[in-house]
Amino acid sequence: MLVESHDEEQLIARVAALDIGKAEVVCCIRVPAAHDRKRRMQEVSTHTTVTRALTELANHLVDLGVERVVMEATSDYWKPVFYLLEAHGLDPWLVNARDVKHLPGRPKTDVLDSVWLCK
Figure 1 (spheres, one colour):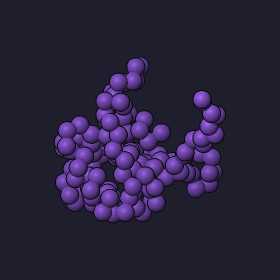
Figure 2: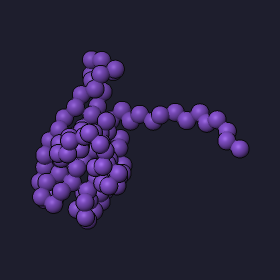
Figure 3: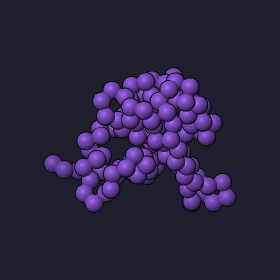
Figure 4: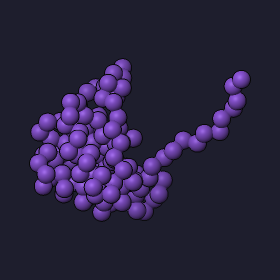
């Protein structure tokens, strides 16, 4: 027998999304606006996948108070990023790239992927 569920949509106030490739990571960060909590501020940046750049990215996310980092990657490129973010106390989530990329009518670029994941 089916029973009605009263699930609430979970909104994460401070979130980041990463589109990870072999040589670069595209990061989109969305946080509440300082002057109006109903509005959001967004930053999109590109970083290399060397340890120093990833550490700077992780520190930036921690400084902004990011609560969750959603990431999608092909192959095993996600592993160093995931473990580095986790070591900095962040909450990384790995999503299946197959589920993200096959959405009809949506153009495919790394920047657009990171923004879409963040939203």
